[in-house]
Image (cartoon, rainbow, N blue to C red; front, top):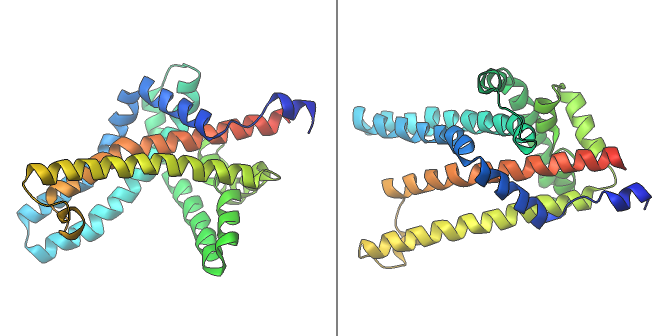
Amino acid sequence: MTASEKTHKLPGVFPLLRDAIGLYRAHWDIFLGYAGWLFLPLILSLAAFLAFESETAQLVHAGFSQLLLILLISWLHILVILLVPLLNKDQPIPFHRIGKQAVALLIPYLITTLVVEFFELTGLILLIIPGLYIGTILAFAPIITVSKGLGLIESIKASAALSKGRVLAILGRLLGGALVLGLVLLISWIGIEIARTLIAGGGLQGIFLSPPSLVTEIIYQALLVLFLPAFMIYHMLLYLALDKFAKDS
């Protein structure tokens, strides 16, 4: 290990989580303001069920609304990628310019993301370990496409170079952060569902056996809006830390 590597160590899961949650809490109004748009597909689905027959409404819900949700999640991720470096340094936010940037970068981001997910899925189909390896070395390609404006091939190469010699360290932090945040999300959902079921006078078995209701859909969407920015901020902070660590070492 070089003297530079000793001085600049890649942060662990809990320091990254602390910084991600701290940044989220400090600027919750910005992140939730953008994340709130994720309610739009649910609103459109509800409007379709009120305005159209069941089959048409189901088509709108399963097709258009789900596609819109994917596009909005991608748009939100692009915004987080653009916002986090500025917010992390307390720099002023040019909201209008970033909004236009996010729309312009949507297609390149989607192309990179789809290619990365294809390679990840192929690796997982072959064996779990190749899938995890591919997923790790390509994990930052969409971020690089947005933050550095690189093309598909250049972003993939840059992500692979960034993870060279650090695959296990990166994988541990990706899985660790997802596990902790995912566990909090799961506990929150179960807690809300238990409270709702008990208030309604139902049994606890109804939480898992009863079909999804409108209230359940709203709860799920609210939790998605609340927690998704935290996952994205954590991922972006890991990338920034890794990029700095790579330059310093």
